[in-house]
Image 1 (cartoon, each protein chain N blue to C red):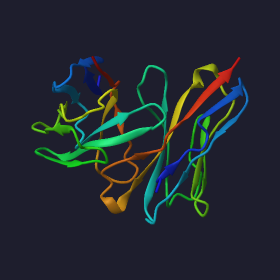
Image 2: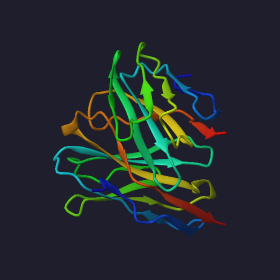
Image 3: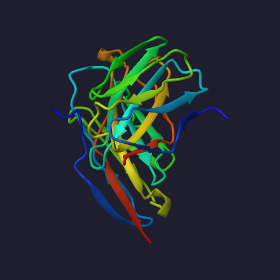
Length: 114
Length: 116
């Protein structure tokens, strides 16, 4: 089945540690996105990528890094510089053909700090 | 300034009644798209309905319809004959073409609870 796979479902980070969240899609979509969700704040864009080897910062990129070496994959690294990383992280993808292109989402990763 | 405003943090509705979830947006673009997503407690985001800024008819998808009032910049979601399975968070979102349609901006959501 086509879709977006995020792993792991739950992740724990120790102080000063970098952690990487995985996102893989087999929808042949050009664009991929990472959103952060905090209670009562909706979804906020961290990074997005429209093409392999290129990505742009979203609204809250500080403390995060990404790579896009393959069309199918867009991993997110939460670095030690991100002082408040506890949140629900959602990966999404879409085509790039117009305003009506909806985002398809993965099932999310809950990151918590130990 | 908030691009997408959802003023109802939570709503309680009796089963089988209709419910309207409010959404207002702010943009200077002429071309944009409006989306509604549902997020059950499991966490995944489920696409419900889309409305384009040039669409003259209100969008409908089964029990979902979008009450689009362009001059008022509102895009309210209407759910007819609500069911217990409709209990979830609902998010309104907008894509603006002037920024190359690279991202959706989301509102803060409305938590809908259907009462049996």
